[in-house]
Amino acid sequence: MRMRSLSFGVVLLLLAALHVALAPSDQAAAQEAGDDGGALPLSVTLTSSRAVCTANTLTELTWTITGGVPPYRLGIDGVAVARTAASHRANCGPLATDPESGAPLPNQTKTFTATVTDARGVSATGAVSAELAAPLPAPTGVTSSPLRTAIALRWDRVPGTGPTPTPASECPCPLYLVRWRPIGTETWTTIVHVDHYSNLRGAGFYRDEFLEGTTYEFVVAALRGAIEQETPAALAWSAPVTATTLAPPTGVRATATHDTITVTWDPQPAAGGYVVSIWGPDGSTFQEFTPDGNTPHQVVFHDLPPGTEYRAEVMVPAAMQSPRTEITVRTAAAPPGWVPLPRGPQNLRTSATHNSVTVAWDAPHTGANDQYSVFLFHTGADREPTATDRREHKLLSGAGVTQHTFRGLAPATTYRVAVRHPDIVSGRVEVAVTTLAAPAAGASTRPVETECFEITPGWPICLTPAATPA
Image (cartoon, rainbow, N blue to C red; front, top):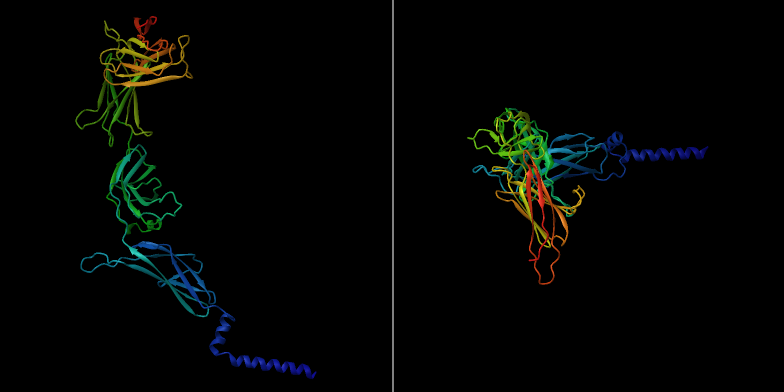
């Protein structure tokens, strides 16, 4: 019993000594936050997402707090930050300027300061600085290329755009902010454009979401980082450029005689040219029209077969987005004594050496278009060519171009040669021709000539005489 009392007294003495050792302020802190034991000194490290901060744009700030006793209270430049926040966006502020000239002062920086306070009321600060710079220059040389519902822009590249590429990066991927709105409206559509296809001199933008026949206003700004899209008023914008999307031609109409069709239409905004075509049961033809501001918007097709229905189309060429309008028209009946024009290549003739074949012909009629397709089939004379047969093809055009030579052929070999004239009534003539035998050393041969005669229109008869020594 005496031993138990002694042990209890020792405990009381120890508790009294501990009470004397604690200062009143420490007792209060211990009661509020508990025993902090060996807590490390409180500190905060602040980090900015941008080494170069464009004036009046934002930067993303993050922090690391160590030591002290949680929970913590954090403020950045006097602004309280929520305990659950992972980052904080702060404005980089304006550039200081010379009071006399108004020009920005050189070598400016922006410093952000964080203050953290722990549960004991102990505070610590940390800071980070970034270079403060003027916005990147406004892009220049902005041009537009409108299609039907798509618009492409080009401009001169602005150095310093976008994030700095890593050594392994294949693309610096410059960043731009592109804004547009229909003329007469107030609301802008804005996107960050990552220019994957930029080169050292130019940048480009393409988007397919516009309304046809509508005029839009575009402006472009260069970005050091995507976060700058949040403060568009702080950026340097290009001069506005407009683009009018194309629309199907309006007011398309046609008149006809027995052998002509005249197609007329209204001028279209933003159309730099037109292609006017007609299709009949036996072929088609077209004409190109470039407006000059004075000539009426119309084309005339001549030498058409009478009493025939045609499909007429006016198109504004714009790659895969070419708007077009189509109507039908019929030529009048043939007048008494009307004589049809010859169709297809006329007077086809060929000549051959041991390794070449030359084919020549005359135009179907005066005023016929000067386009021809010439084919050489490796099929021989015993059958008609098929789609899988080997062939050589040449498209010829130009006034007076009515001859072509195929070279590099095999000796003593029969080929089929065809000439086609694409027109509103297309025509084609075809003939078999055999190259000469390979000449002996020192010998020469005279080309074999083939002549074609057309007894019945559209059905030529071609004769090839036997080869004779030179």
